[in-house]
Each structure stands twice: as structure tokens, then as C-alpha cells.
Length: 213
Image 1 (cartoon, rainbow, N blue to C red):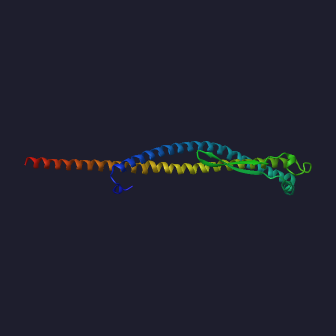
Image 2: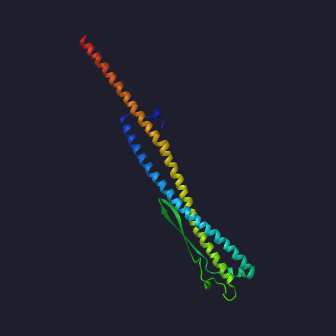
Image 3: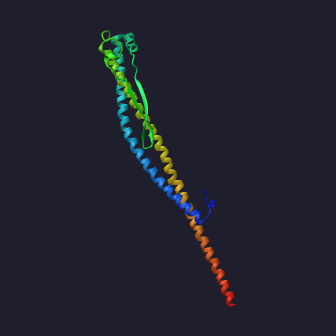
């Protein structure tokens, strides 16, 4: 806002004071939102650490069990058991709102199965196949949970950064410029008032001199 472009009028001063109040109110609201989002982010971050740790453990377990199953049943036996699965996991994607931020809410169904629902023949396979299937079901559930939490973290972080930019813009640019403009108008109005007072005094002095002369 260039000061030279500002009209030093009473109406402009009134409008500017109103805009300053709105900016300061918006600044307070955005600052509260930013602080609230940061609190929510750290809550989700702690949950993400736990989920990621569980995901890594489940992945290591699944890889280990696959190696054991390949040793016990052979790769063909493992593939045959895998191809016999008829009921695939169902993933449902919804959304929820965290302080105005839309984040995903992912639910899964048909991931964990009973042994008799996995499709392969119970008598033709060893318990190793069951343990391997269980480990991979646990892994899939961990992946779904991790995807939800880490996407939530990303969206919260994006909103925090966007809100921080708006807070900083108001604090360091918009409000200071508005206040500088307000002070400039006040100064110019005071100057104009003094000039007008001086002019009136001169007119009065001339009038008095003229009357006495």
C-alpha cells in the first residue's frame, strides 16, 4: 500500500480503522487455528510412529513366514494356496474433518479370515501356510492404517503451512501497512487542520487590522 496513493480524508480513516479491526480479528482466529492444528498434528505424529513401527514389524514377520512357507511347502504349494483365495479384502474410503481439514477415513473388510474361509484345503496344507496367511493379513491391516494416518499427517502439515503463511502475512505485512496508512492519514489531517487554523487566524488578523485601520 503506497502512502502517496492514500486519500487523507475522514471517511478513508474510518474505513481503514474498520479494516484494521477485521484484520486483527482474522489474525487472532488464524493464529488459534494454526496452534490447534499443530496440537492435532503432534497427536497424529505419535500415532504414526506407533503405526509405522507396527507396519515394519508385520512386514518383517510376513517376509520371514513366506521364507518358511517356501521351505516347507515349496513355492508351488504356496502359490497354489494363494491362488485359491476367493474373498479379497474390501477397502472403503470416507472422510472426516479435523479443524476444517478434510482427511481420509479408511476402513477395511474381509482382511482377517478364518482358516476355513481362506479357500485352500486344510488337509492338504501345513500350519505354516495358515501362519503365513495370518502374517500377511496383519500386514495388509497395518498398511491400511498407516496409509490413513500418514495421509492425515500430510494434509494437516499442508494446512499448517498455509495457515502460517496467512498469519505471517497479516502480522508482518497487511496490519503494519494498514496502521502506517492510518497514522499517515492522521498526520495529514492534523497538518491540514493546523493549516486551516493558521489560515483562519490570518484572515481574522487581516479583518481586525482592516477594521482598526
